[in-house]
Amino acid sequence: MTREQALEILKEYTQSESLMKHAFAVEAAMRAYAQKYDEDVELWGVVGLLHDFDYEKFPDNHPEKGSEILEEKGVSEEIRTAIMGHADHTGVARESLMAKVLYAVDELSGFITAVTLVRPTRALSEVKFKSVKKKLKDKKFAAKVNREEIARGAEELGVDFTEHVEFVVQALSSVAAELGLNP
Image (cartoon, rainbow, N blue to C red):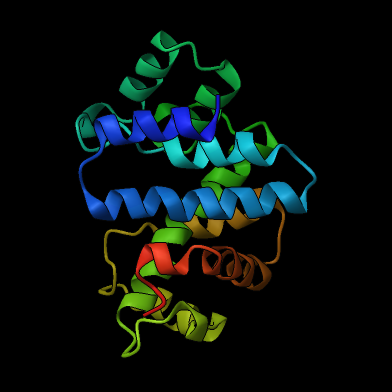
């Protein structure tokens, strides 16, 4: 599947600007990790783009409904399995490196975006690990973000948490303007 094909699906099912930006953020993080691990950058990017494409239309059946839609469109089992694994409630094990990375960057990307948006400058370039760590401790800040999943993601991936956060911040920097995080 190409990025253009994934974008068509994403745009067909997603109207929310914030959910589109989240898809682009996760795509950037997935691409960066794919490059780091010498994996298929395009494939990993597609997974990042599509991981939440069905959420807006089918929030109660996400990502199961999305997996069905992707299967009907002939999308590979590798992609569908990684996407299913990013939601704990599916029970799908995260066995591939790609699935582990998706889980590790999904919630974290959203949280980093939230941290950036409350900064006076709204500039991702100013976000440091210390800021993210401080906001993680504040349970009222971005209360819907699952902090346990953020920690578990880094643990399952087997990476140092500080390095992981810094890596994802750097990855998001490549699309900061598109995310509205680089005014």
